[in-house]
Image (cartoon, rainbow, N blue to C red; front, side, top):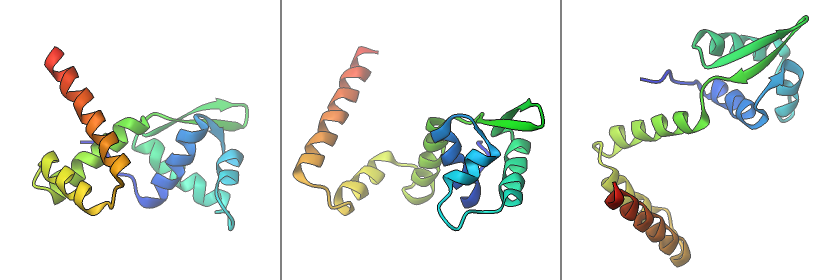
Length: 126
């Protein structure tokens, strides 16, 4: 099971995913005002390094950080957890809820149908 990110870690990881690699100053700069203290970011990074979610390369006196966790992997794990916890581990229940409650336009529903049809065709080829 994938290690869970706290909300603060998730926010920092989103900036790191976007930047792909960054120094501390880049990460602090990515935050909106009021920007967090360097020590706050350093603490989050240390926790994320200990969880093996972030790595770094030492460049002289500074570190260049990079995500070890891929965004797609985290999203898939997070999504699977939501489906398991709220929809009895049934993607069909999730899809039913989503399409009924998300107030999707006709175009969006047709786009989803197309995506699903493409996946059906791919599965048939396997």
